[in-house]
Length: 128
Length: 242
Image 1 (cartoon, chains in turn purple, red):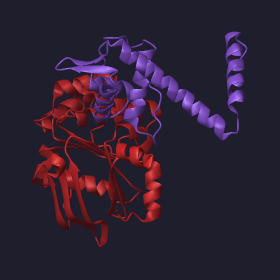
Image 2: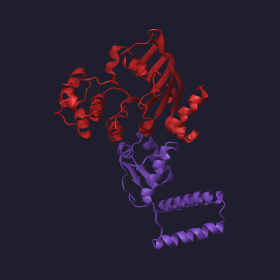
Image 3: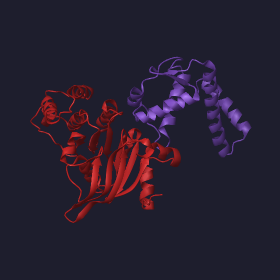
Image 4: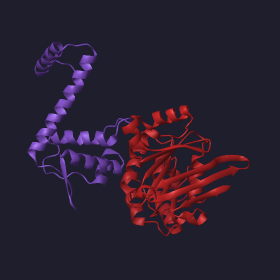
């Protein structure tokens, strides 16, 4: 069963986010057909109207294209996918930065902390 | 015809009294077609009474209820499939016999759809109803209710007292077998968390009065609240509509 959604945030955006991540991880490949609205509704346990809204949103973002009478497909436009990748990176960094700032860390502390964490991670020393 | 969406169910100043006690009090509500609607509120708030009025099993003391433009009398059952909170079948029937019985009651009963749902729910057709687990009796009720090709499906507490696995299979079953283009589903439930992601609209009732009706996704977009959080807020504010 799919992971639960946060009940106080718009589900159509949470689902769009999940699908975008699947596209970036190449679980959904370029040009691949997305499940039909009903299939996606069943898979993710949400209302079909919500899935419809998610698909429209993804189309607006450019990560999918709908072909009349055929369904919805992951875009084959690599530049759109690169933009998506950059955008999601920026979003993550921004939320990390805001959280750290709120706790009083300086930019230098953040960068050195991040570097330290990454090198530990690469040596397999983090235990989470 | 608000926003061009067809209205499927209308309560027009409905009061329903049992002896001298009002279960619904000057209750007006208009529900759109093609949606999944959750009817929520405390025990005794009037949810089940509202469903029974739509199904034509009872009639209003005052006011009127219409379904698809037709006044809800007992004959409205040709448009409404109703899952009662109570167990309403013969326990000496097998699963197959129960399905045949429902097929004989309703001309709109789609037997092949019922078979598909039985497969999906993994129900043993040869078992007698009385030998089914509570969860499987719940699944069977869902199967015979969903197999009817009618514009309105009502489910009174379909998840009540069932374990999480059964609740999940019922929710998935609704998504799999409902005809979203043509059918409107109204569910009463206390298991709000389970049903939350599949609802379009939520209607909150208290003491027989409509407190509020909202689009569930709009609640999350505009107020950043879940249904339960919203209910608490509305109860606190006394539910005076904006």
